[in-house]
Image (cartoon, rainbow, N blue to C red; front, top):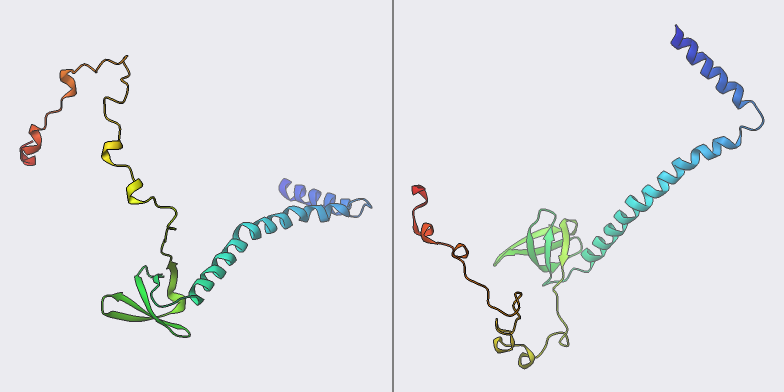
Length: 165
């Protein structure tokens, strides 16, 4: 019984507070967090998904023979021909299969470096240009490191049969 009286007191307080003249603006402010959550959800979830979908549609529309694609099933193939809604893919040498364009998940782009990026073969460093251990200063004042018996590793166990261990 005390719970029902508590509920009726809360309901009575809520109904009497709503009839006062200054309580009308609180209703609009109570919807502001909900509107803000919906707006942020749109910005974080819906808009990027639409952009990805639009970009995938553009990639499918720009398919041309010779392009390498991945299907939604994970099959990597080469485009042989493109019709309206059907793409013929070569999945192995001499093996062709027809797929709908919607089954193309990704179109692979081949990286083609610009000719200015790569140095000429004559300008590439050779092994003679690399520093030797004499060129690199030692950490202990120029003295070679002392050899200790603990630095050597024995490889004798490698030749043994693994079942003998």
